[in-house]
Length: 83
Image (cartoon, rainbow, N blue to C red):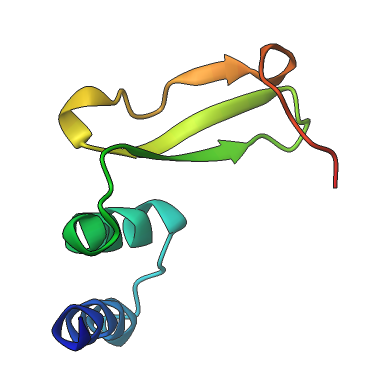
């Protein structure tokens, strides 16, 4: 587990060292494959909500082969919780 944590932290610092921004999609794609065995992940998705809160966009998914990145859905058709 410590090896996985160190690998993830190193990848983040390498990106930051190159002065690249880190997007949640990138973090998801870096972390999830390394955490699959530890957390017993079968499927996982990362969504973003548009500013108008009318649409949600699938940013990333695991496994990659079974997800269509950038798919968009109307938020009215999804169960949501207001914060």
